[in-house]
Length: 390
Image (cartoon, rainbow, N blue to C red):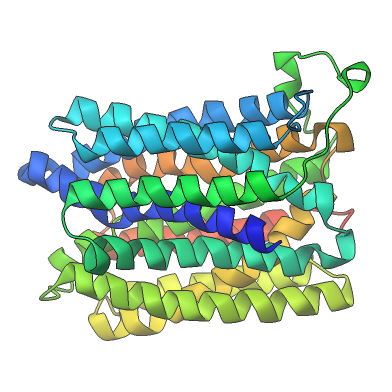
């Protein structure tokens, strides 16, 4: 579990350091007058690559019969492809190159995510999954925070930042792959590879469908609230150093997320209940967004960041446990988790394209944070329709 945590930590650092700091800076350098549009284009097209890679690599890993195991080869291959994309970004001098590099990052690291996420149902008993889900949530938070630290304090410049991210993700994957066992699938037990199996019929598996919708909406709300945070700090709050302000908020967010993930995850495992804790977490996240609707100030951001952290940490701890309990079949775990992980990636397609319209027509960043709160509450409504998990 420690090595799984470290592999996830490297993955999330390599995703969020570019999203939070490097890509917005690079977009502004390439076109200062249309930085939001450039950033949105890069994020949206890259997320489309993630949408394809996640379930396809999950489907493939469920059927891989390599002597090295069925998950590990994809974990390492995804890390290496993501690292190649980060190197491309490090030397990108045009918007086109930026898009290509980010597509490689998203394809590789989302393939890695599909194989790593499957380790939870593969290896962890149901009664402990919220606790382990909390660790995965903490790794995502620490990846966000440490990514900001690495590219703002430890290294300077876009090139060094991207190369540092590439090194970290490869080292994390190597540590996990080389020092943990991976079950080998006998060739006689390998199902036929049929792309149509990427579809999970909602009528046949309604709990899976509702859980997917909830996961999509919670991630959409989070994307609305965080993707343009650097620009919010500079253009609305007028923080004297938006990068430093973002780092402060990420540290507060991270500490609160850790506390929320550990506490709520432990309580969920102890009681065996999932839905009430997801509802509580979604409500806390909505309150954090509404604070910035009412008071779009630096002080309000200092309060909203830890609230969002507690809510998102608690959600990830319990949601991962809940999601693994509604999977249709054990033999297709990685594929089905890949389909669920589309709910992580699709908001990155939707949010950048929708955000421009929200900022223009719904009152700027107040409207954006209000939309974030609405999306989060919709996630809570969806989770109430899941019947098979208490």
